[in-house]
Length: 453
Image (cartoon, rainbow, N blue to C red; front, side, top):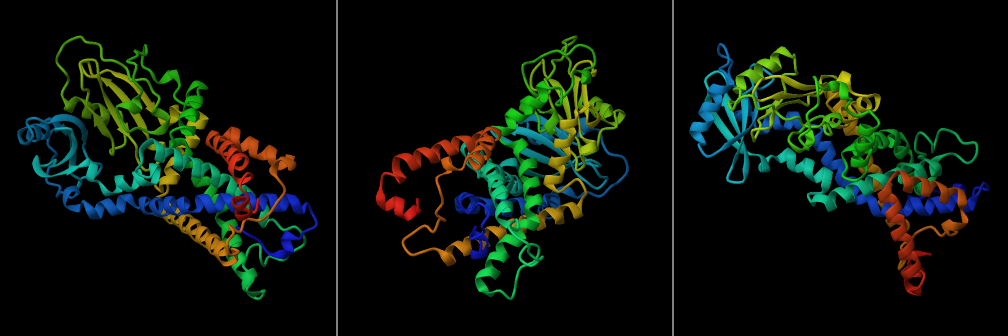
């Protein structure tokens, strides 16, 4: 969040340097606490498979013994135990020693019932609202504050891009300089320089990884992500019409409204079953289709809830290449849509890879460790920047670097405008900052002095 005197006195555009330094300072002060929260929760969520394996071992683990029972037989056991429950999902389990999961809706609650697939024995139940890792994911994605939290997280992510760009400019050598202070901290230049390097050097090393995590997380955001997804779909980089088998019946629903599916499939229109009879095919037939179509064994079946609904197979596995979304007519068993990774447009494939890399699943444990190092680095850089600020903050002042007004720095102003267009929440926040400065900071002498404006 700051730099040493040798750089701040550089002869090359010193006023531009101080302008960028000031914006970097404010961006850091405002979003650093949120970056720490996102990094900690994200670092924990990276290890969701291992953590849930420990937390729910008694639910997950079964002893393979002969052939698995039909899914319909497992459903019968669930209906005996929960006669008022409505069946919603079925997950057969991707390994021989993994239990089956039957999702039900009961009295306004969403429950997962764990069944031994070899004996149809009831193992236990779990309220989906009580899943610890889902809570962490919710905190990471929206601070457990719904739409408002989602917008805050998106705003922080977008401003983090500004933080990276301005930080790289401040780090970049303004004159011939050795690797010390650029790639490694300087240990023999005094405490001031050492603490500056302890912030700037690690920030340089993690900048690319931090930028990657930001850009791969934004497609999930409510505002930017929705617009980006719509653009991808309308441009053909989302799901192409060729995934449909025959005509594409329209139900008015998007697949993301009925199932948790891969990003590229979220805007896939949900077809309607053609009512040729009023007898819905049993779940066993859907499992047969899944086996026949060679879908990844981690798939989940979403059960239709009305006479026009369809069975949906959703495979959201560790690797992007194994993703699949299939819609099946509930009466005829016909495959109405089969959407795989190979059907994705170029943009869809890039986002799919980005998401699995972001979640740490694409390359397994090494992927988790690399992402964890980046998260730890973000926490360290945020805290070291905060320490630099506290260490140098003048008494009774915020300690922001004084700089010319941004309107006088047209090149930097243009960059900020471009970022405001690319990231709408940045643009809106900039308007808010401008109004705050115009109507309050510049009007109240005490505030103006405190802000060094």
